[in-house]
Structure formats: C-alpha cells, structure tokens
Length: 427
Image (cartoon, rainbow, N blue to C red; front, top):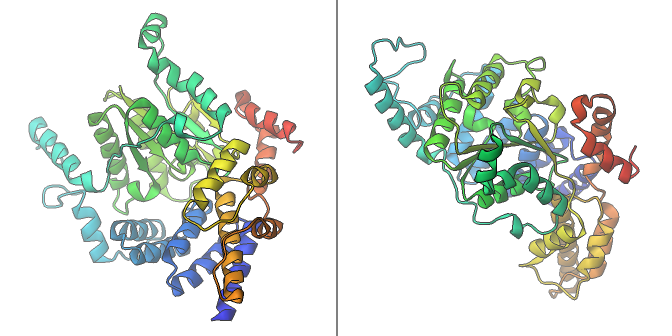
C-alpha cells in the first residue's frame, strides 16, 4: 500500500513537470481507479483527452471512471466514441441507451428515404427529438457574470470591446449596420479559465449555456454525428438567447488535412454549415469555442462569419491567483497565510497549477499531522515546500506556441501572443 502511494506521488510529480504526457496520466489514472479515487482519475483523464482525444485507451479508462462516479450517460458516450473511432464491436446495451434517448429507430433509420414524410410530420418528429434530448443536452443558467471573475482585466476588457459592447447597444449596431454573425474562439494554455470565462460571458448576456464536447456529437452510425450536431443547434435556436460553447474545438473542428477518421471530417463540414446557417436563423445564438491548440483548428472555421474573433486567455494575474488560492483553501484548516506573497511567487501558474499547489500543501500538512498524532492546519512552510516541487505547467505550451506565433502568424492572428512572449522575455 505504501509502495502504491509512493508510485502515485511520483507520477503526480512527474505530471506536474510534463503535463502533456498522456502515458503518465494513463498510468496514474489506472492506479487511482484501483484505489477507488475515481474523481481524481477523472480529472487526469479529461486532461489526457485534451492531448489525445482519439486514444482508445484514454476513452476506455474515462468510461470506467464515469461508471465509478455514477455517470452512465457519459460512460456510454465515451465507449460510443471509442467504438466509432476504432471500429470495435458495439456493446448493445450502450447502443440501446444512447440512441434510444436521441432517436426512435422504429420511425427512422440512417439512409431512409424521407421523400414520403410530409413537412408537417417531419416538423413534429424534430420537435419530439428535441424534447427527448433535453435530458442529454441541458442548457444551464451560469449564475455569475464577468464582474464575478477575479482579476483577468485585460481579457474582460477585450471581451467587452470585441463581443459584448455591440450587444448592449443595439441602436448603434443598427445605425452602423453591424452584424454579430460569427463566434469567438478562446485560446491559450490549459487550466487558465477558458471555460469559466465562457460561462461568465453567457451570464453577462443573460443567456442559457450549453457546453458541447466530442462525446455529445460523435456517433458510430453514419450520418448520426452530423445529425446530433444539427439538433444541438436547433435546440439552441429554440432556446435563444443561448450560448453554445464548444470545448476543445480542435477535437471537433480539427484541420481536415490532419484528420484520420472520416467521421470527424463530416462533423467539421456540418459545423461549417450550421455556423453559416443558410437554412436557419442563428439570431440570438452565440457561439463560443475554446482550444489549447488553435493552430490545429480547421482554417475554414476561422474565416469571417464563423469563429472569426480570437481571444488569448493567459495564466491568471496576481489578483486572480490570490482569489483562486482563497477558493481552494475555503474548506481547509489554515494557519495565518500570506496569500499575497504566495500569489506573487506563483507568476505564470495556471488555475490548475494553483489548485495542485493547494492540494500538495494540504498533503504535507496532513502527513505532519499523522507524524504528530494530532491535526495541525496548513502553514506557510507547507506552501514553501510544495512550491519547490512544482513548475508552471503552461511553460511547455508557450514553447510550442512560440513557433506558431513566429512562423505561422497569418493575418496577425497571434499578435497578442507575440506581445506577451516579448513582455515575458520568452522569445
């Protein structure tokens, strides 16, 4: 048992130095699942999926973790993606549950001739499908706004100027004939709050929020993935004003030249069609997307009228770091801590890094309490020790991004990133 714990700690330390190593996260996740630490395994598997969204091993373990967390729909979705990508035989129970929730196969089969179906019955069928999918695609009320996001003033200001101000002054939009067609692409290193910013933006708009991932769209049946995506947009149009947030858009909208599976290529084409909305009105449907790898996103998705605005989300500034530390320590026993000093010391740390720092400090305090045979709170010394073993995980991302910013900066897409790299002397 002690040896197992030491292996887990060693893997966690190795991942903190090399967060993009999928094999390390896979090994750690399998050990955590064996130790009934499904929630921790789930977090590492989500990170692994960001790096390798089509890995059968990662998808299999993610399904096991979801089962352990009593999330059967997500578990079945992960298995469905794995089977679709790797042509594995489909578990009939998974197939029945996931498809029964979306389609009535007695009335519809892929490839069925729809010419005999009247426009009225087709409309009713679509309404029925949208009602049935409500359990899977649930729009949320974010419950907070940009004012509730600590720090990150540069991001909020750019978001206000590029996206929100025109919405708040519709008379000026009409006067200048300005349209809000298109969407916003948030990019930057992992763990820096892109999803949180997207939710806050939905709250600022007073709109319902739906996060869409690869598991919500991809299906093994030919044409079903495209149909799933179309129905997500249909529900968003019915629920307007609404925000559709495509997390890890590089998985759904990967450059077709890089795609190894025809299923993904079809999804890219369908996404382009939905954003163009020739047959439908996207008024009141706001599309946000996030990625750690904007250079892998299909260039057709980033042309004007689609995801044509890009916003760099950088590691949190000092004020935001202090707020993140307070959040992760709110339910833990602490001595007098100088959070301002810790925040200054952790320049370049992502939100995920800060959460891991708090977790490591808590582990040190817990181990000390076990040695003393009495509980003691978390102290500054625990943070000092934990800090010695951690490095900013975003550093590896900036090393990769630097090359694209220098040599693939078409149209000034990465000017903002170049300015940051120069300011931090990373060029």
